Amino acid sequence: VFLLIHCCYFTQNSCFVQARPNVQTQTSWNAPIMWELMFDNNLYDQKYKEANTAVAITVFAVGRYLEAYLKTFLTSAEEHFMLGLPVTYFVFTDLPEQVPEITLAPQRNISIVKVEKHSRWQDISMMRMKTISELIDAVLQHKFTHVFCFDVDQIFKGRFGSEALGESVALLHAHYYKLPKYRFTYDRNPESKAYMTEGDYYYHAAIFGGTCEKVKALADYCYVNIMEDKLKNVEALWHDESHLNKYFWLNKPTKLLSPEYCWDEYIVNAEDILVKRLVWAPKDYEKLRTG
Image (cartoon, rainbow, N blue to C red; front, top):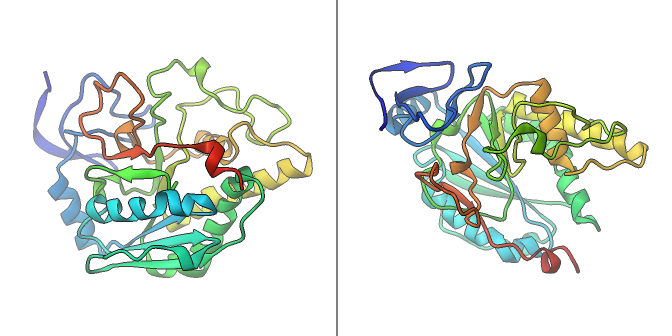
């Protein structure tokens, strides 16, 4: 039974109109964790439209990932992501001539940026932090209020709207949000800058976002620590995700997205997931990460 809250009240980032008693809805530092039934779509949309919000998306589609995922990612985003707000997709690829043409709604644009293809997929994953930081410096900070960074192998299925916007936004990993902390796969190697002995949650690097200033701070932190590890011939367990978890342990996010915002449909128990806003696309890593 859901407890109806009769008067809408604002926390730092969120307007809750209903409670979700069976899931955690707030962190120990009072950041909201966004779940369906906890917010009024219209109130959020009105607030961010009045604030002249403009959102940038970064997505990397390198090598075979472009053909396998990019068109579905973009077309599904046009149906569900930040509808009613100005949005620009920044597509980073080594194959710009192969980026598919898609129909964009008014106030929505796409910008294609050519990048080098690294020989190892791990390096593609980790070096995106440097690229994101450089883009924020050169372009985004002058034109956009918020930026979201996505993995390309995902499909939007439901509203992914302005309720997800915040100063510093992290995503709870679908496979870990119910597990005890000792099972979190933090980097446990003391030689790595990503080394952690404790943490709050396990965050998924498939999505992160916030203001340009905060996302740049995260990207710079991860890149610098990745490079320091490389000098010692060390690689964090889960690459940039390990460094992202360390960053959010030291610099608490102001808003957390529940696993509704990035759900793996192979997970059998989905009782908490009232809306699947974005899902993992089927993955064939052996084919994608070779050649």
